[in-house]
Length: 220
Image (cartoon, rainbow, N blue to C red; front, top):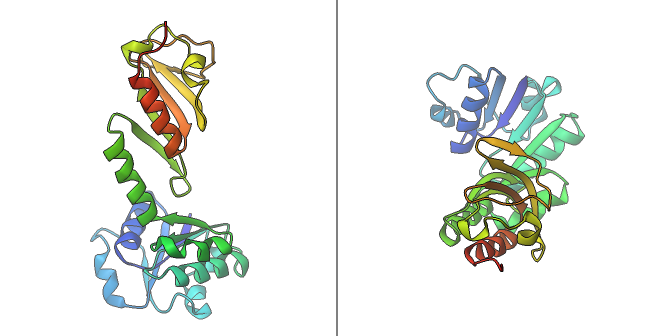
C-alpha cells in the first residue's frame, strides 16, 4: 500500500519506519530537511522537503495514488487542514490527524476527522495504571474514551455467574472469556472460575467500578 506521512518529528519518523518494515511504500514530507535525520537508518522510503499544505508538494508525494495519509506535524491546526484537504480534495480513503494539545481537539473534530490525541491518551493511560495496576488494557478506541481491558477473576467470585458480576454495573460489556487457553463468547449464565481472564469493553469510569466490585467478596 502507498502512504503519505506529513511531518517527520519523532512520531512521524517512527510511523514511517513501522509502515516501511511492514512492506508498504512510504513518502514522508517535512518543511525542514534536517528532520529526516530522525528516520531509522534502514528506512528506504522517499523523503520530500516542502510545505505539507502546498498542493504541488502533495502532488509530488503521490497523494492521488495514496491509500492513506497521516498528518503528524507538531501543529494541530496544520494537521487538521492537511488531513481535511487529503480527504475532501484528493479523496484519500484513510486519513488520520495527530492532536497534541487537548484544548485544540475540537478544531480537528470539527472537520469530522479520525484523530489520535497522544497527550490525552497518554495521560489517561498513566492514570489507569496508577489507579488500577491489576487491570490490563488490550485495545484502545478513539482517544481512549472506550477501551478493552483484561481482568482476572479472583477466588472470591469463583462459582458466581457473569451476570451476577456485571448486572449492577454500567458501561461494562463482556467481549470474551478465556479459560485454560480457550476463549469463548461470554453469556450472563456462564459460571466464573478463579483465574478466568475476562475481556471487558468499558469506559474508564466503568472499569474502575468493575475493579472495585471484583475486590469485594460476592454475596453467597
